[in-house]
Image 1: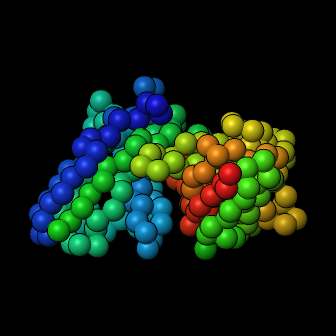
Image 2: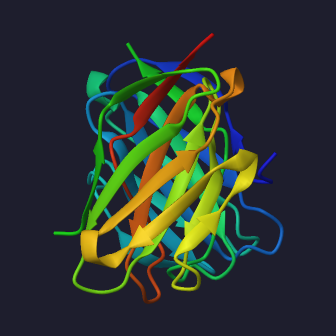
Length: 114
Length: 114
């Protein structure tokens, strides 16, 4: 158990819909990351937050947005969903978000868009 | 662009044989390097990481990796494979500074034959 909690574990939704994925980081970790894992793209970094502020942005689509709340939990919002958004979405956390920190991953949220 | 290359998307070894999973990175600055393992339907678990201390890094489950700057490599080895090592292995890199996000290779699926 990494200490990173993600909900829901599985989600099936229709094209055009909007979903929210939730993440609680490890106790004491200030930085949260979101990654997308798919068969064709592999593991792609989406976005990083540190103590409520966006720190780095990767290959995140404009239809996707995220935020980190004062209690440090984070949400990833996916809207206008397309079939190609079906993937495993990981949340991860680290102590202070700097390079070299160990990044701990949750077990992921499986999103299926039908 | 920063990148990580894992040679061989599938590697098969016999139980008790040497495991060698290859990883090369592109970098003009010293990187931080990581190996993660993903078991079926689970999240990523850190095996080991290199952060510019010793070039030979020992990790969990008997795995180790050697940082070779001249070859820009960070290959993962284990002297004797066990059936429980069957999983997908990801090499990842981060490049310093306040943005600790990881860039992952495409992964190598390890099969262990009895």
